[in-house]
Image (spheres, rainbow, N blue to C red):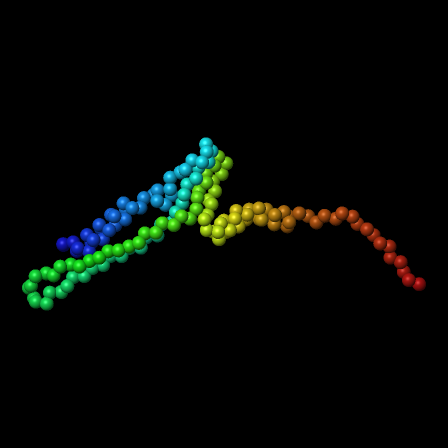
Length: 139
């Protein structure tokens, strides 16, 4: 079966996109800040792609085949979202989006909050002193 011209158009477009995007586009190359710390830029890639075409019908039966008309288009956006900071003691993701950063802080604080709640509910009540007041009867 003969391959449709739109398949060739689609294949050429995908090959061009593959040339533009590689792993280093999403996670950039490490930048050494000093001997113990490196910074890796992290980006979000959004790709929208469309291909279409048409063949004109031949009005006369048995006439020549009309040419194929096709088009392809797309958009590729690269948005930096943060930096991965790798140091000797830890690895942190620094977000450029403020709200994402707040959520990350909340998630990071959950273990400390859970430990505080555990301490509150597991401590036995402490009685510092017990005072007995004598009761006097009235005449």
